[in-house]
Image (tube, rainbow, N blue to C red; front, side, top):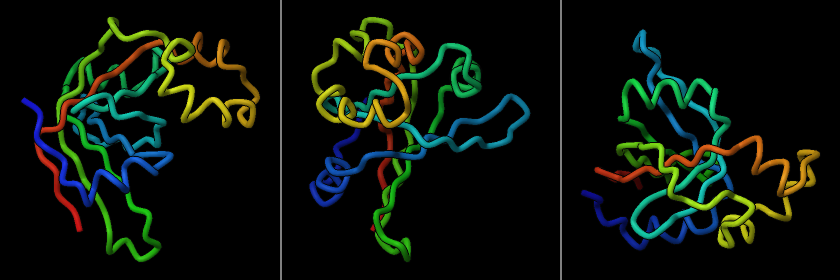
Length: 135
């Protein structure tokens, strides 16, 4: 079951370009990774390369955290813990209008096209929040 994200956090998340996704390796080592994301209803959606370590980690342990701060002193922060699933019912990123609206302009900066990025980052991961904390 998803938890409600307070409006004071929702506005920051609407303007955030990256979040840090933390998964846990099989040996228990946390692995934080910056990711592009969109909010999709009460969940978060990211796209990954299918063979990425984060995918292996999620398949073994679906408990994850998303974190964000826009404050250089980190006094304003958000940490969202939740459960991640591979959700292949989601359209490809190139066919996802909210994703393209947010990241389409930045894709050329990483020397890709929307189509090549969608082919490389082809695995959709959906994260359902279970707890939200922050300042």
